[in-house]
Amino acid sequence: MADFRDCLLSAGLTTLPMVGQFYSWHNWTMGARSLWKRLDRVLGNPAWFAAMPDGQYLCLTIRKSDHSPLILQLQSDNSPAKACFRFDNFLADEPPSFI
Image (cartoon, rainbow, N blue to C red):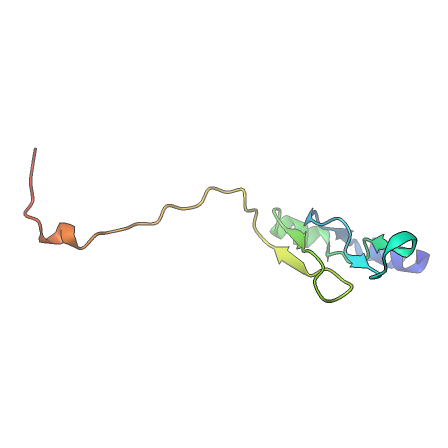
């Protein structure tokens, strides 16, 4: 494991911020033998963080596998949503009125 950490450090890789479930793996046993771990991560280098400053990953709930699905989000969802332009056709049939 130390060799793996050294490899990550020498490559300049660090973990992206995570949202959602903290643990990404479960051994599917109950009781005292139940084990949850954070094994899965998404990594980036400094160039990636500079290009994608809002990058993060979402750790979803485990369904069928013993690992959680991870979704890479390149933009933050905190930005306000753009309003949808809506045009009602019945307005086009009305004569113009000026008040």
